[in-house]
Amino acid sequence: GPGSGNFSVEGNIVNVTSKVAIESLVRKILDNEAQLGLVSESTQELHQALDGLQTEIKATQPNAKRINGFLTTIRGIAEKAAGSLVAQGILYELGKIMHLSAH
Image (tube, rainbow, N blue to C red):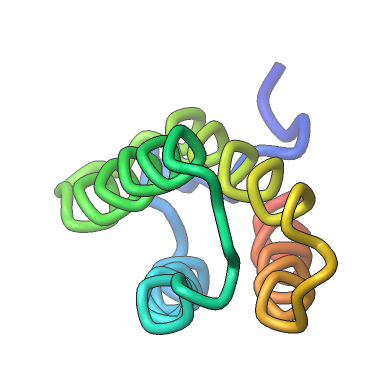
């Protein structure tokens, strides 16, 4: 149901804090992607999730469920690369965003 770890959605609008946090997360991942040492399938999956996120947060009415799905995908990929400091940083940011969004 609503509020089960989804974005705080007020009239289906993802809160601004989440948007800003997601934008900076996307940038951070793209800037440091090389250091994640991902296999090509993961890279492809990661890019799809990042594209999806960017599309959603630009939408007039971002879809909280889809955003959560993309974040979950990114978290799974970062967990596979957890040996890298970059991945740890990404997981930390993700944790904050997903916590922000779970009301």
